[in-house]
Amino acid sequence: MFDRGTRRDFLSQAGSLAAAGAIAAGLPEPRATAATSKGPHDFVIVEGHRDMWEISGRTRLPGADNHLPISHHLAPRLIQGGITVCIAPAGGGDSVEERDGSEEMLDGNLRVLDTYLTDIEQSKGLTSVIRAKADLPSGPVKGKVLFFFDMEGTGGIQTNLAEPVFPEERSLALVRQFFRLGVRGMQLTHNMRNQVGDGRGIDVKGNRLTPFGVAVVKEMNRLGMMVGVSHLCTNGLLHAAEISKTPLVSTHQNLVRYSKSRPQVEITEEEAKVIAMTGGIVGIRYHSSTITPYKALAEEVEYLCNLIGPEHVGIGWLGHDKANPGAHEIEGHTTRTYSGVEAQSIFEHYDNFIKLLSERGLTDEQIGMVLGGNYLRVWRQILPDV
Ligand SMILES: [Zn+2]
Image: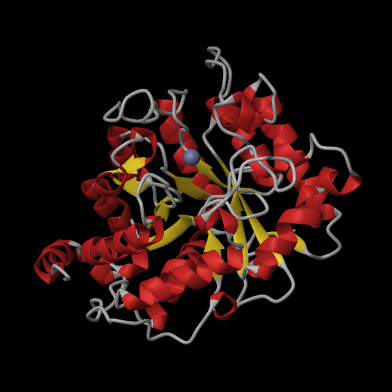
């Protein structure tokens, strides 16, 4: 089932990866049944991209518990599900909904970030924020979930054109301010075009990054931020790979052959290879357009492992769970009946998916890389020490 020739051909070209000692052995053959005896709490799970729909939805409901939705609802479910780190786009995207209703990009980003920080500060130790290598877990964490702030696009750091005497460096002020607030990753674009580059929603091939975009990537490298390329157009991604000194990460996209319907969140095989060549990660996400989505997702993980190596694959998202069954739906506040993944807990999602990956032939070590180990490797490389 594994196309070892294709994998070998790619790896033979991937000299930089080999030099970095980053290539793992090829996957073993698939099995009829899962060989692993491990479950979600045995791994460091990094959930690559949890949109803020539930948080913004709950804060519009009555009840003090809903006004601190992370402390009272989300964190307990993530902890029960075995999630060690949740990568949260805590700065909003380029739709008004993703900025908690604010029309202004910067204003919305700051409001969303405050929603997360205020809730986390009041969580009585249930949650904290990863800001430095010293904050990274060395293994599965019990009774706590960590957040990693990753802005969905750079709408909040746009700048006015420099005046003749305006120091160019000042145009990066907002990058540094978000860093000071704890943001450790930024996708260079969301779906649309901004002053950094072109999103796939406006032009899949698009243009190279702008001069400002180049300066943003360099400043992110200097500060120790994860350079995100989900939604970024092809030429922008290639340009980012040329200039970034740290790995590129796509937290939540699917290969074109497994997606087919949403160009904004698709990635080509060539783009996935480029991300791997930088030492980065391609994170796949649940999609409901297939009859057996988890089997299709596990197949996609296997395909990606063969294409770019299991050390470059991650999980972005395994779908809504029973407490948050749809983007704008919350259990008890929607009349729709749920089934399948939407009727399961986060723990069930990951427990099922771990078994499917094992059936596909991944070893426990490789499953650990895909579930979260790869993110820890990248963060150990790029984050500030303390
Ligand atoms: Zn997205």
